[in-house]
Amino acid sequence: MGAERWFYRSEEEWIAIAERLKQTPCPHCKVVGTLIRHGYLYGFDESSPQRKTLRARRIFCSNRNVRRGCGRTFSVWVADKIRRLSLTTRGLCRFLKRAAAGSIAAAIRAADCHLSDRTLQRIWKRFDQGQSKIRTALFGRCPPAPLPAEPSRRPAAAQVLAHLQAAFPNADCPIAAFQHSMRSFFV
Ligand SMILES: [Zn+2]
Image 1 (tube, rainbow, N blue to C red):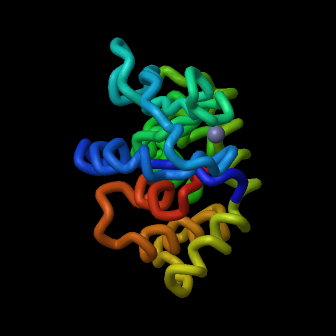
Image 2 (cartoon, rainbow, N blue to C red):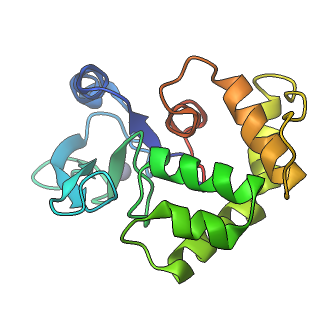
């Protein structure tokens, strides 16, 4: 599923990650003892269109002074944010469910958010192209769910979304849970 990403779901989880930084190998160069906090990444999404929200914490692998790090940075993401997408995982989930059940045009109209039609179409395409990878990742957690009872225009996509729900039945948002547990963005 591409490069491993780091996510946290709560302030407690972030504090635990931050406290372990000194013992954590850098994901790039694998050196231990060089990681330090390096600020924040803010951005807009549908949860707060007027004000930027925290999307990720930046980490720097320090090569300054006597440190032997690689000088690269990476992000520890808030689990309900998605890289290069100004949409939360909840907004994405609502949109994908509508698009799988009915028409994509209707899902775009219902999305009622700041994103353009073209962006939403691109998001659908990203999901559509990633379906088999998502399915494979979900198979590692549980067998596929039975096909949803409601008729759907896109049964394969509806099946993946039902599988996702079955894999994280107690999650507040199954896409955020997927990202956190698979260490990978959903789309
Ligand atoms: Zn490094």
